[in-house]
Structure formats: structure tokens, C-alpha cells
Length: 312
Image 1 (cartoon, rainbow, N blue to C red):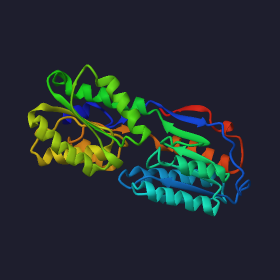
Image 2: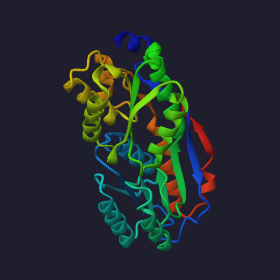
Image 3: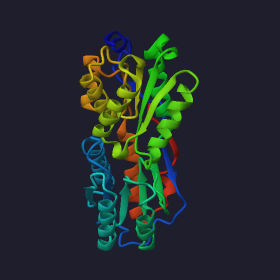
């Protein structure tokens, strides 16, 4: 395992996809804004994925402040609870914020809240995850390409064992459109080349869910059968690796990841995790912040939504 990591040169797999910027054709709204004394709300989905608080929040806040010195940025975290996020969004609508940046806990369940914001003249920018309803803009990475990167890395790590063993798939929450895209991309590479022994969709991306399901996979498949683990992000990788170690699986099979969290980098150096997909969050946050400020000022989002920005 450690030899594979050294051969990877930079420890992480640098993403070579693009940030997708989309203005969705809706009017930016007729809220209370128009100048610089604006309030932009940022709704985050959970605390289980560390990027939201450690990366995205400071990046979004910094960029919004650069574009609008007098803007106020309010951010809240739903901690994985749909009802909490709906209440948070309702509160922002009632208080009349000028724009909302939304990372939905559940894309489908937030549709009503997005419609309510639109009716109140408050534009909603979907950040990283597409949400249902009349959103005004969307900034994200190419999720299918992320999955393909993970799938290709896993095949390379498994080598000849890809033909004889089984892969356990730890996919993200199926209510998250990104999880669906990651899974689709990975399967486009893995199907026909490996046997998928077990596949799980982990609600709310919880590491403890991956831990529990990996223990179940080990019981069902046997220790010697699992030759690779597709984990959609670093949190799921952590839960999976913990279960593998608890069940005395040695050597550990290659385990994928995503987000380049500090814990994942440490596991890679230790030889416990094979890879992670590093996505530079700054271009994504910059794009979303620009759209949020433009929307809050009632400006045409086509001015800032320019299709794709290369991140490599």
C-alpha cells in the first residue's frame, strides 16, 4: 500500500474537471437589496463533512466581502436535519435577506422552501448540490468525473486482484444529487471490470453508517474476499477503514476518498487510505459568491455565469 502512495507523487489525486457555473434563467428577485448594505444567507447541510465549516464558509465569506464590503454574511448549519434547514431558510425569508446560498440536506425536500424564497423575491444560489425549485444559479464540480477518477484509481490499486476479488461500494446519501453523480461516474469505470460484492447508500454521509455497513459486508463476504473499497468521500473512507481494522483485515484493501481532509491525508501517509480526490474549493466558492452578490443586487447573472472554469 505504501509503495502505491509514493508512486502517486502528490498523495492526492488532483481533480482535472471544471466548476460548472449556471445562471438558471430566473429573475434575480425584487427583495430589499440593490446596493451594498445587503445580507446574504449561507445554509450548510451537515457537520459530518468537515469542508463545509473549514473550507467553504471562510472562502464564501471572504469572496462576498471582497465583492461587497458592506454585505453581511449569515451562515447556519442544519447538522444533517431537513426540518432544521427548512426552519433556517424560513427564518431568512421572514427576515428578508437579499440572497441565499444553499447546500441542501435533501435536494427534493427543499423545493418548497426554494419556491417560497422565489415568491418573496429572494434569489437562491445552489452551491455544490443542485436543489429542486426555481433556483437562480448553480455552482458545482463535475460529479461524474470525480467518480471516474476514483474508479480509475481503485482499478489501478487493485491490479490483478480486480479479476478475483470483490469491491464494496460506500456511496453517499441518495438524496444528494452529487452522490448520485459520483456513483454513476465510478460505475462507468468499474462495471465489467470488478465484482461489486456489496453496495450501500449512506444516509447523511455519516462515517458511522459506513462503519456499520462495512462490518456487515465483511460478515457477508468474508475477510479474504474484499479486494477494494469505493468510498465516495473521506468521511465514508474513515468509517470503512475503522471497520476493516476492527475486523482484523490485513493488509487493508485500497480505499478511495474525496475532499482531501486532513484525516484522509494522514491515513494516506500511514498507508491506510489509498487516495483522495482533491477539489480546489476556492473557484467554486468564488463563482457562487459572485452569483449571490449579483443576484442580491438584481444584476443579470449571465454576467458572472460563464459556463466552466478550469481548475487545473
